[in-house]
Length: 396
Ligand code: LMR
Image 1: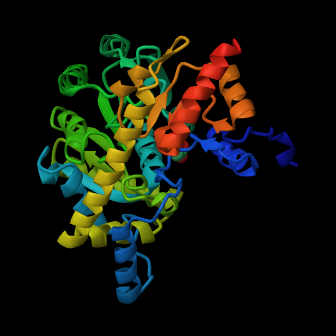
Image 2 (image 1 turned 90 degrees about the vertical axis):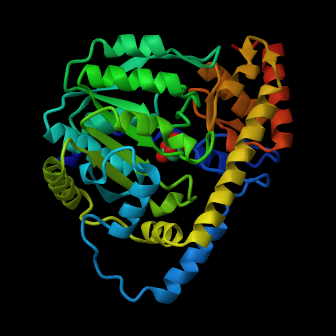
């Protein structure tokens, strides 16, 4: 009886919020939990360019036969051009389609383990799934505390000092843009410093780029990743289309590997393909086919980019309105204006998070992370009032 040896695992605390919020009957409840984009009415619509591409796919797709462990190679190539551009010579880059950005990270972790990488250094806090994902694949996460929640700042010197403990050949995880969960990225000079440091110490960077286009703009959001890619001989780039194409449940992503030369790249790709085969055999097709159709069509690409820009501006507007709340008790909401993208993490205790949920039907991760897209302008006013109420009630 082997199952009797298993112990019950807790639900994922972030995903649990989806059900808790849905079950709450209170009108005016606010969901700032899982990271999905929402419009002013709280909907997560299918993007119009995606709908148009789906219509074409429905009309034109002649077969649903297997494509192979690499997935849709047209998607992979179009994405490589779009994201990596000419930051590195094309013959140094290999890539394959993966089930979402998480699939890309999992494959990255497994190929690192196979290459003998024992440790990955991660700025803390990070996306809650990063550490368990790498650990399960056999690469031990080493966390470097480097964010200050009160001032909403990234401590570059602290991060570099933490990396000072790394051994040559260790990996380092870098959020390409719109840091999850903090929302604070290095500036251009910071990226250049990190790139130099990583190259000098012979570390292997793993860039997680899951929010391109939701920060400062589509091109500029890739600058940090490109700075890293162009500075090192070896690098992995995990990419997600779930947020910027709104394809969440279609699980659409890719993993790219940059190698010193094409021959090494071919060996890396053969490893990635064999690992993919053993994990999911072949990735789901639908989302990648949609992205390919959009990226191969100038008109659809322009439509998608416009819609993405509207989403980006909505996030920036909500962030500014949130920051207008100023100082409430010890919380300086003005500081969230330093960030970008979907997330900010407020300096709230677990008890305060719970109180806001119980008293005001405001749902957020236990860490105090909020999905800014979960607001509309009315909800921001409600949120400011709820924080004032919390302070007035002495909840700590
Ligand atoms: C999030 O952080 O909310 C998203 O990336 C969704 C997830 O899988 O956690």
